[in-house]
Amino acid sequence: MRDTRVRIGLIGLGNNMLSHIGRLVHMPEVELVGGCDPVTDMHTRARDRFPQLASMPTFATHEELLRGGAPDAVIISTPHAYHRDQTVASLEAAAHVLVEKPLVNSVREANDVIRARDASGKVVMVSYQRHTQAPYLKIKEIIDSGRIGTVQMIVALQNQMWYAGQMNRVRQGNVPWRMQTHLSGGGQLNDSGSHLVDILLHVTGLEPSHVYAAQQSFDAGLDINSAVTVRFTSGAQASLSIVGNAPGIGGAVWEDVTIYGSDGAIYYRMMGQPGFEPFVELRRIGENDPVDMGPLAQGTTPDQHFVDVILGKSVNLAPAECGLRVMQLSEAAWQSAGTGQVIEVASLGH
Image 1 (cartoon, rainbow, N blue to C red):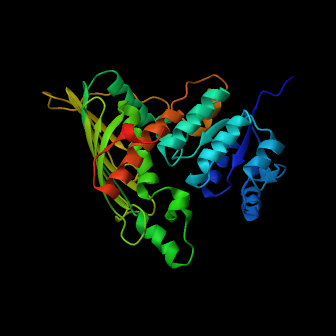
Image 2 (tube, one colour):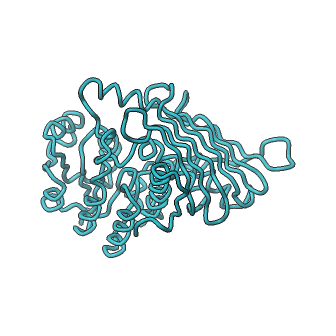
Image 3 (tube, one colour):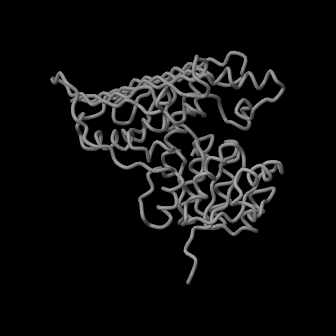
């Protein structure tokens, strides 16, 4: 009988990939056929952490993995600057791709990935886990069903003790790649901020048209705090505050978001704080009490969703276009902060 498992290769064996591996090794429809990382200690650490990988071959580069492992699919968890080339190479090797956020570091790179995906006929998914989590599935369902009317305004705050954590490592003489613009592409906006920008664009379906931003870098050389004003093609608008220099509990994230529509609003609060679940509430104009939202859907993980999409069991909820929309807003924000001008998204590279 033919083995119908999805043969997956792992590009990058750092800390974040360990989380993916922890889920993949328990998925019977998956076979891990190889991993790669330029740091050989990462190979050893992965095998030590997961005995199931004892016989899995490892390689120094993604090119060697694609040739030697011949995977059906790959998961990419590497510094952001490598995503474009690793994704395109994987597609050209006929492998589906699940890539960690952000998809890439520019609009031009995002369009490169979309063209390569279309030419290959393979799946490209961005590992934005909120797309498959129950609270956000519910928020999108409410907006899509018209229960708050037409989306008019988004007010969103995210804060995290990001800057202090990164600078502690810098002071110890270990400059993390997230603090090196040539590897990260940007600071907090391109890191935790990417999750916030993405989910707001995803659940509303809005596309950014014009962006104005002011940013603070302190002594980091990249964005730490961002104040971003957005106008969308629909005429809706947003005020986004992404704060990387904040008190917090380790790497936990605090978020406070309201999505206002012509007939009501959705509120969510405190993602990543005690309980690690957001509070979600639906209210309608003219009604004093919250509205019953109905039961939450069953959520899943990006890894399981990726495999389900490959096997034809699900529709891709986080395609490359989501990464493109995030990068349109993010790249426009960086340009605006640098020039002091409103940036038209249509002017960005194609």
